[in-house]
Length: 192
Image (cartoon, rainbow, N blue to C red; front, side, top):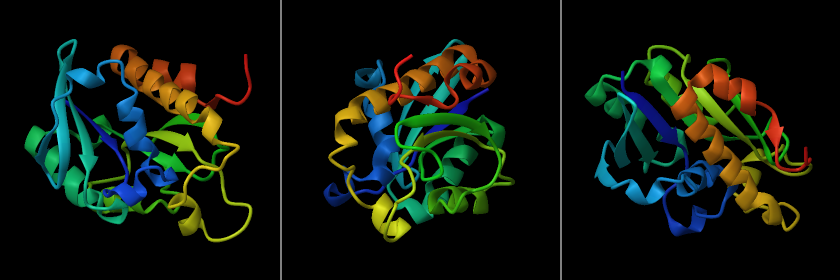
C-alpha cells in the first residue's frame, strides 16, 4: 500500500527560514535525503523511495500553504493513496516550541494547509506529525508563523528538525502506532 508523506511550507527564498516551513526542514534532515531524486509534478516537488514493500511518495507542495490540497489531492489520486495513508508534517502553534506529536485525524487547529488538504479529501483522517512552534505571546498568529525563529529558539532548531526526521523514519520502519508511542510529546528542550 503506498504512503504519501507531505511536508507543508511556502515556496520562495523569503519564506525559507520561517516557522511555516519547518516541514521542509524535516525532509532535509532525513538520513536518506541524498537518495531522493526530486521531480516537479502535482503543483509541487515529489520523490519516490521504497521501504520494505511499500512505495513512499514524498511531496513538497509549491502552491503556498493555504492551497496545499491542490497539490496533495492529485498525488493521492495518481498513486491511489487512501487518506489514512497520508502523513502531513506541519507547524503547530498549540504545542510548545521544540515538541513533536504524532496524531491521527482530529481538528485542523486553524492551520490553513491542513484546512486545504481536508477540503480536497474525503475526510480529515490523515496522519499528522505536528512540529511545535508555540503560540505567539503578542501579535498576530499569521505574523508568527510567517516569521523566523527567535534567537532563543535558533540554537535548538537543528536538533528539533532532526527529531522530526527521526520520528518520520521510525514511522516508516515500525508503523504509526509504535512511532506515536515513542515520539509523541517528545521535546528537544528537556533532556531525558
